[in-house]
Amino acid sequence: MVLALMLKTVLKLALLVIASAPATLAAKAEASEREQRFFQTVEGAWAGPGEIVAGKYKGTKFVCNFDGGTPSNAIGMALDGSCRVGVFTQPMKASVVRGKSGYTGTFLDGAAGKGLDVTSGKVTGDDVVFALNRSTLSGAMRARITGRDTLHITISVRVEDDMVPVIGMKLKRVDSGAVGAIAKK
Image 1 (cartoon, rainbow, N blue to C red):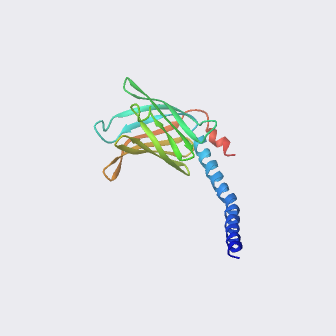
Image 2: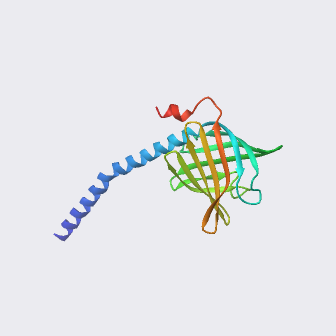
Image 3: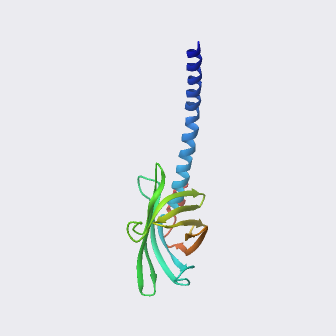
């Protein structure tokens, strides 16, 4: 009798788990589609000014050109290009993909080189925030789409308990149109 009652309880729990699985999978699929739509809006050519807003080089202005893309077999994005200050040009790139444990990637050549690692991230509407890390330095990169043709990027670092913006960029789309705008229809 006790064994039958236990089996009946286990069976009910199993049915509840199975019944809730489609809702969970649907929520994940919806999130994946929403994230993919955001990243598709980043596809294309971007250019615009930026400025170092804190630290030793505060006030330094620069101009960047990037090509944005998305991987064909994953959810994520890549920005590849360069930023110029006067006659000096610095290659710049960031790539991020979502895996089973969240977002990972690199800014420049990653923490193993002279850059930063992307250790997590979250997409909300037209906004994405990625956590950045290198040894004892931690920070965040925020990319925000405003309108169809404007991409704001802010890089902040943690100083004690505060996040301090250190680099800001306002990029405009310089190609003929947003690939993501076509994909949304």
